[in-house]
Image 1 (spheres, rainbow, N blue to C red):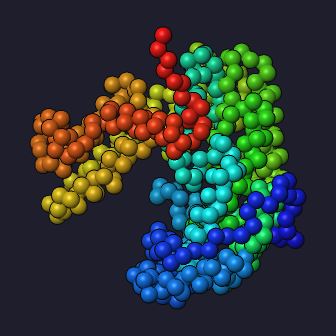
Image 2: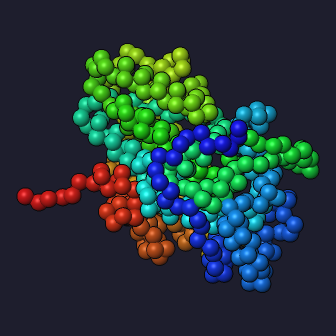
Image 3: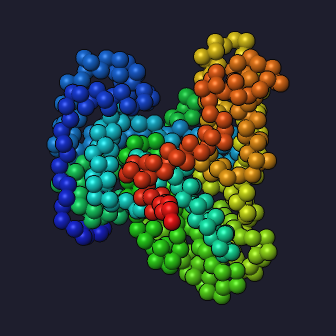
Length: 471
């Protein structure tokens, strides 16, 4: 039956009732929830947020009644799905290139936010998530995952090892989650009572309708999956995926997960005869686990990067997934960053610089029409944010490579200050209170290191830090 718990609890109940909310809690939650109005809302969400002072007691009664009874209101379980093209460059006539984002009622999102904050506290206190899962966790990010990944790849490259990085592609991951398996995971973590009842009520009895323009389909019941666009869905997906990391590490293969982005990597000596067998067995175990948990791997979109010295590029074999030989690529995109076989990051730097210069060219046309403060906001949103994304990876790059991004920053500074193209950049940076690009990246590394050492970041980064001990 849908929603039936299919795994027995493996530990005693640790959390069986929610903490009821107070008016101050609701005020904070309403301030944090985005004012996205759903077609099913009786009034615009921005109006509810503006009138929250008068409605806060009404919100408190509804939220606490839901938490005490362990029920998610049935009229908040319907979603309006708007297909969104994954990338602007993709073919809009191919339905596989769309992402089905669920637009959910505003009150339902408020309820989800309350549950998510308490569930996150439970997960942190019990350390229930996989140690390599970085998605939607405080202090974790794509950058922390990539810093750990690139650190390991560089270490193995320095040792002369060959590393195969496998980027698994899961088809429609959120849409195929089995409710019974998920409830079994939740029960096995120690959830019970009205907490488990509320989550079961949240999952079951959902429906959705697809809207294109002014045309809307009839509601369709859902027997599996969690809605994309929901606040709780990424957290529930992390819980659902927890056993996968243990499966992968059981073969001596390392991994990093960011929600449904799963990356596993295996290092071995260039002439190893055991490596093909171990990696193929690991991939077969991953495939079996995915099938048992109602998830579908797509071998045709799974990518493999070989990280090694040039002399070791021809290892003579390819990993196999579900009978499909996975070709070794010269570069892959991992969590938005282009990685190449030598980890030079030259392709990544060139791509970032090219897109940033293109944005600067467009922003320059707006300069006569914007105040300086507004122009600064636009430049930060479209240009410097690109330079800052995962810039911790750029520390130690050759000056020739890093200079491309430094030129972008100099051009942005000249645009904001109105200086000519020959003006020295250092005075402009001082005027704007900007750190030069190289020091900006170093500062990011120092911040990440500080957080890792003081319990504000992932433990997997703290474990990779070697304290300096002078002789």
